[in-house]
Length: 213
Image (spheres, rainbow, N blue to C red):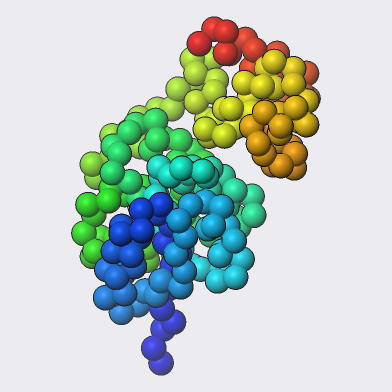
């Protein structure tokens, strides 16, 4: 009996690259690209419909980028392995992705065979790191005292700056053009990541961190 092909969703804001990845993966017998998306928002919409085994996403995209998408998947699809694919060899990006629970981090010039192997490994629960970014992945993360905001995604950092100013969720939502519920989720993530008990303590911690950085 033939095993079911692994279902993959591909996310990249550049249509040519997105279609190219889909075509390459279509040549691999045990993989099936079930949907494509141009950014994180579109990806979240297709995930619920297609329920893939692995999500393959670009790290740098306008709108909701790969790190923000990873954070949302951790909340809404915690069992879904997320592989980040990028042209950037960026230590902070690699460490941020892995700290947020990425199943792997690969550069975009990865061969088809290596990419297919990474998808299979991620589906089995493995962690896949491109050898060229292994140094960044293995480097000790900055301590909370040295860089308290290093664990935050870009969107969380924007919300954090306004929380530090004492803004309400409604004010932050209006300033950043976000739904108030999204702001509330970001604040909850800030409380969890920075291990603060309430919003007042969080605002004080953020104010100190932002003024000392």
